[in-house]
Amino acid sequence: MSAENSEPKSEPRKKNDSHLRKRGVSSRKLAVEVLIKIQERGAYTNIALANALDGSKWDLSERDRAFVTALVQGVLRNANNLDKTIGTISSKPVNKIQPPLLNLLRIAIFQLESMPDIPQSAVVDTAVELARVIGHVGLSKFVNGILRTYIRNVEKGRVAVVEPLNLAEMADDQIVAALSEQHSMPSWLVSRWLARFGADETARLLKASDTPAKLTLRVNDIAMETDGYQRLLADKGVIAERSKLVPTCLTITERKSIKGPVEKLPGYDDGIFSIQDEAAAFVAQVMAPQSSDVVIDLCAAPGGKTLHISEMMNNKGRIIAIDKHEKRLNLVKENRLRLGLTNIETYAADGTTYEHPPVDKVLVDAPCSGTGVINKRSDIRLKLKEEDIDAVNAIQKALLTNAAKLVKPGGVLVYSTCSIEKEENEDIVEWFLSEFKDFAREDITSAFPEGTLAELGLEKEAAEGYAFFLPSRHEFSGFFVAKLRRQ
Image 1 (cartoon, rainbow, N blue to C red):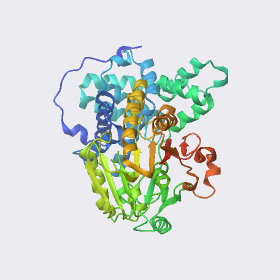
Image 2: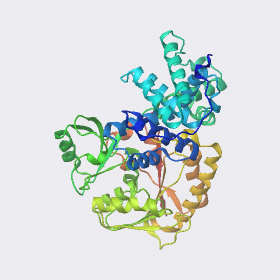
Image 3: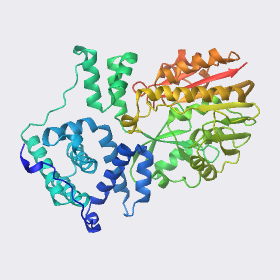
């Protein structure tokens, strides 16, 4: 490899904002900063992105905000392949390249590979300019050398083409290595999925984890009927499909006119809708709260399920929303006001020790590994360790142990996670029933709209009191929910 792309030593330089004012530089710099926060400091993708976009000193357009989000998510989903590509070009090992520079290169190569609408010259020129901003002219030459070499390799057919994997002809360890690399997924997680679901299902699961999440709205039917809001959106050029699983949910399929944040959609400020995945919204249907109920949500923040339960109770009865984090509870309070819901009380407390006289229904939407929503939270690929599952198991058991005390005789306990790991779902329910003999499973067939259960192939599970949604088989996020009644 020639010396043109050997990374020089960094030298501090005085940065000038004029570099950032050039078109595209500021948005890419923001993407680099977000990636570093996620990779180096363990920040959550959605929170890091929201904070960066809302706190940016640059007046980013809606297009730029969407572009930053696409860059961050794209790099996280393809990190292994991007690093492999950089490693074949750079004379310096990838793990020796400084994080800002490495993420700059990842972003640029991701654009060259996956965003053909952007001219190659624009990608290179902007990356070189940004290299000057984060370092000095030597770094810009390094970046220019890497990217120009990559483009020449593509033109000469020297860049390896990703061929479809023939899993049937591969040994298990080969399958793990190949799928892990192809999807930038921890090998231990791929290995777990292979053991449980088999090679073909695991491949489909990984593909689903790489697919951007759909935008789903849950209509507050206290404020407006779902059909009416669907027509209102259509009149504004926003096409939405009605959910088969949750009748009040609409999935946005096309936005011809209203772009940008969902807050710009009609009715947001008036409390007509919330953002919630269909599988998550299904939890309240399983609970089936009544207007006269007293309900405790032991892990309430950020509040999607709490708000849905309140709406299903027609803003009557009483909901006690508990969470350890006061700041996260503020999200519940803000949305409670926006939706005009008055039957929700919020308290900052530990759900494993919270005390209250027994109530009609308790929800434990437990902290979990999040393996069912990796397409929404790409940082899970980087942060999740196998031992973390044992750690959340302990929390899940502690929450359920306390929840059992809070359910009155004849009352209902609903347990849910956004994990697809058996230890956090079916095994936890089995453990709970063995520890608390006065609880039993309750058939949840009635929670499914007519005809949906057979279509989803979940008749047996529903009869046994739970539903398990797998992204590779169903149309929504990976999710588990179980209903238990105290005898």
